Amino acid sequence: MIKNRVYRLKQAAEVAKDMSLPAGQEIEIVMNVVYVNGNMVPPSFQKLFMDWLENNPSLFEDDTRNW
Image 1 (cartoon, rainbow, N blue to C red):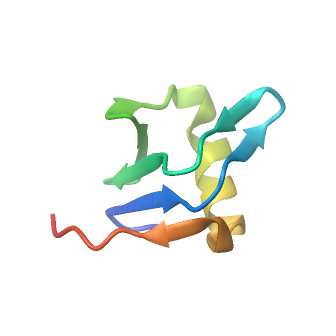
Image 2 (cartoon, rainbow, N blue to C red):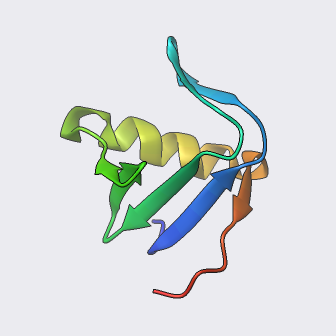
Image 3 (cartoon, rainbow, N blue to C red):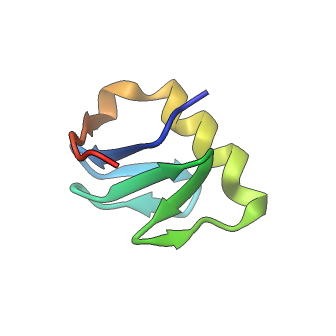
């Protein structure tokens, strides 16, 4: 499980087919909900994003912001 955290992509990446994110994109996790650009990822994509984040840690820089 990922705790409240902000991740920043080191390089462009593809979450799934035709779902790419640019380098530098911030992805926020707040109370186990994924946000991109401050917008909640639709519920049907939450597990996809969470699994992708957990399985690809080398793609991200951990942001050090305090909540």
